[in-house]
Image 1 (cartoon, one colour):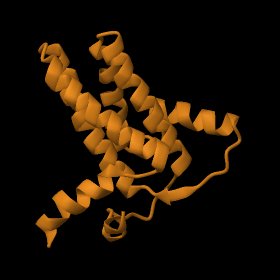
Image 2: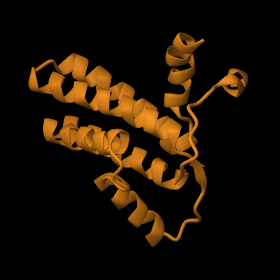
Image 3: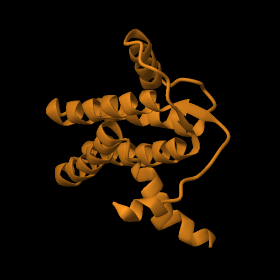
Image 4: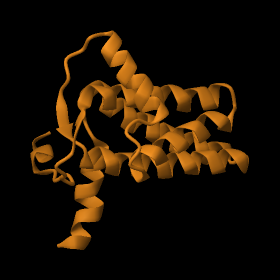
Length: 148
């Protein structure tokens, strides 16, 4: 865990509610699990579309983000602001992974889709349960070295 102190995340001036991002992760977990439970690529298509909205558009709330925000408000949880840039990077990774799962499921490649889905669920679980952003870790290890 000491090495996590050296993680460098992308930075922006925009702020978002961390509690919303954690609930977003829970919905992502449920959609991926639902896709495999019901053998339906539609669930990961919804997730990919939602990740796309969060990662590549200026729309304030994606459908999952809207549901998460509504749940946070209904539970009257205190807002906890964090930097938005790492979450955008993580949403881009989530989009790539959920799009890959969707394509793999359509092609009938069950084992690769399960492995990719398992990795996405693992990353989302770390975000939901521990507020540990794998996007930041991957950014530090994979993207940042190309800029140094």
